[in-house]
Length: 120
Image (cartoon, rainbow, N blue to C red; front, side, top):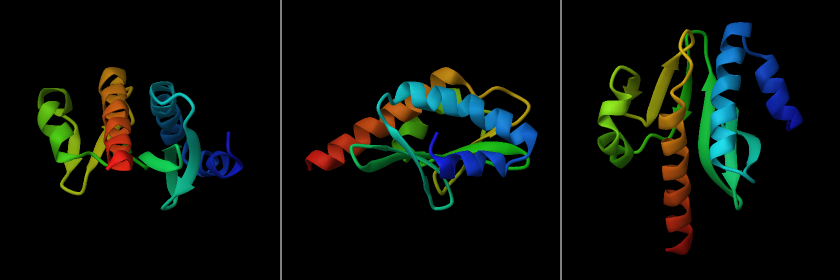
């Protein structure tokens, strides 16, 4: 683990750290070969030098960014019940394991988006 990422995880409360580690496992599995870095003060995953997703731990939830409008529309049923902000954030409560299938789709969607922008 990148030392800065390790430091970020160490800064979290034990409850938030546990939830973020669960989220991290799914995110990393969905993006093999991606590099973990700190960007904007939170953990980001970079693939081919471009940021794909960001994720962070907080007092009451863990979050992933950026939730695009297209992804939100296509996965409306799956994200129902989770807090979603208009700024592209989806929040998962600490007391529930993040939904692995949704997280994988989110990461794969972001990889597709980033690769499409790279080709354009």
